[in-house]
Length: 212
Image (cartoon, rainbow, N blue to C red; front, side, top):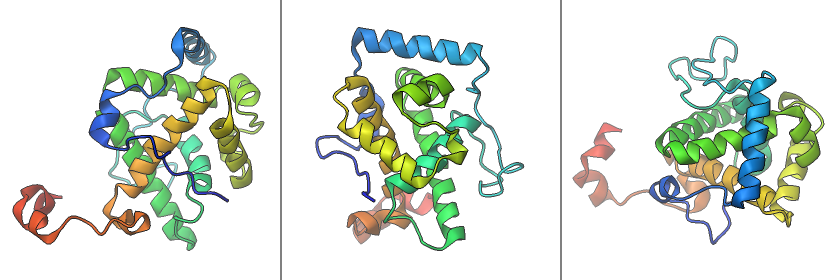
């Protein structure tokens, strides 16, 4: 399996992400996504923030409350992250689940900070992937995300990465961008990208390091 890093030309800075559009789909793509999202909502696709999910999923932090991701979105990322980061996640099952859960929580935190425009785009993208008709026709994923194998998730990511359809290719970039920032941006995972951490003088000088 291939680790799905952010493409080299894509800036992974959170402040930059918050200013720029995730999905440069053009008018036709934007209208299509809006139609999908509206239809998904009318047919009962869950888009409300999940809130605290530890009562039904013990892998999640009991103190964390989701502000953007729905339960369907969480299931989506639980399926995709093992395929995106096959060589980066811990092998031990409990540690692996903890790393996945923490990354999903940081994805939620990041999206909350991105602002309304990017939030709307991502909601439409997630609705496209969670709504069964478009998940099957555009992602070619036949099962609900909780039932999708890592191999099938990897095949989906590869198809969208290599697609000549801008909507799908940009959807892949959006998914991998927010996931990479959430995983590799955490200090537990800095070593995976070769980042040694902030220099000692910065840790000593900047109070936010002491308050983290």
